Length: 289
Image (cartoon, rainbow, N blue to C red):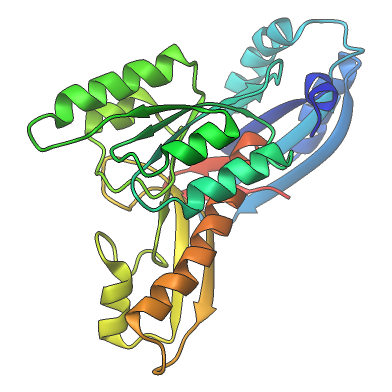
């Protein structure tokens, strides 16, 4: 999406108990203010009787500002018990990336950003190693080395949070950042940290999942991108992919095939989040087309 397109469109994401007429109520609200719906998609979770919807609309001809629109929508949302978010898209979101030694996911994100596939700015890369510093320089992104030890973890995370806030990062991406974030770090960016785990969760959580998979003789390996919560590798899943393997594959083969999956899965998840296509409910997500 181009800058001009982004400033023209806004996105309303919502969920509420399902009942008749919800699509009409929401559509009519936007219509009454002279908004033009560009795209709408909805889903009903039959197990929870929950209605979920994404509405992208052009607000350029509306009779109120988006701030006023949000204020006017609040009573309607309360009437229908909605959980909702209005993404105004008045500026490009800003992405902060954390990475350790493996840089394949970082490289994919930076390439897609430069190619225009990820509609965001990338002002900052933080790493507990220096291996990615030349890549950051090549793409013109500020790189800060934040080495971590058991003794310095609290102070380093405090520094990292301060840097991410200083650079106004809306989303934090863990591009193979091999450190477990503290609850305080997660709480600083609620539902705004995306991780890539080199396994098809919920199988093989934690460290060395390819080695775990090899030891179990699995026939499929995978990668999972998910939101980060306080519980390790347990956050709502955004995207997954798998690759078939056989008894002929060594651990090294699994790692190589897995890295191809990891970078694609992470970039997809980040792109969908930036486009406001992901709606969380409970421990699940709906990713709208």
